[in-house]
Length: 372
Image (tube, rainbow, N blue to C red; front, side, top):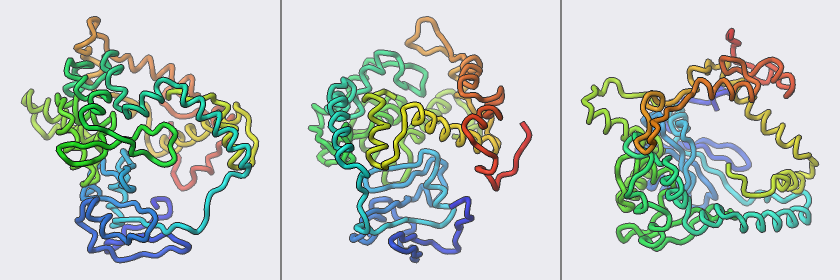
């Protein structure tokens, strides 16, 4: 939408994608929260994307709702808001996606499932949801506690996947047809709702010194209704709470893979679905090319080493749970990372890296080149 200068419109609209594209006046949806907006959308529609008041008001971490799932930690909801675009809806039933080689796809799927079902972390996430990560992360001293000032807490077991399953009688509420099935729902204060994911439990919970799963669920639902990313919201609240404790003036408010299966199964699945053969090395190179192309375009927009950073606390304060008081040696880490990736000292892909991946400046046309 940005590249083709799509919007902003002079009135609130709804974009309808079916066999053709239509725009509908959506003034009656503006101001509605996510739940209200979804109720008003045509129930015959098979899918929709919609923003809430956070997106309308251009909150920098506003996201987009798709059913009970959300996307856009980077503020995609605010992008739609700037366009006066409240929702995107699409009719279904026009076509079905079928693998090019169904027998091969079925064979690889069977082997992938066997690998997933043997993986301890996959099993833990299936049984306890993503909050299966709370206990090991807490033990490792990596749980965000009190605005990241600490890495563990004795009350963490109260928000662990094990405790939430026991306390809230959870059951599957997963993305179909996911093999992991880490999405769960349960009963919180006599209301059945989605279980807050690990990121939400950490940032809206432990990061704020809260270990009450009912309260975290309530705040999770509030963020969902308004269309706000829970992780960024939690970190923002954490900073504000600590700033208040330290008497800081609010004008300084800050701007805001685990391998589960045999890697070859990815390439075989690609071949089964598309009919295009690809080797493991070619598959990895394609992934590298996507990453480097994205980085290249970002650097042409002005992103550089200065933006690859962390909160100041990480550099001058050790974690309370670390007896050695270690801090993050980011400069040394970035230097090594840039070298591995094939970037220059300012974090920009080198000409050699672009050439190796056959990336040409024309692929990022329309953006003025700035000197390094």
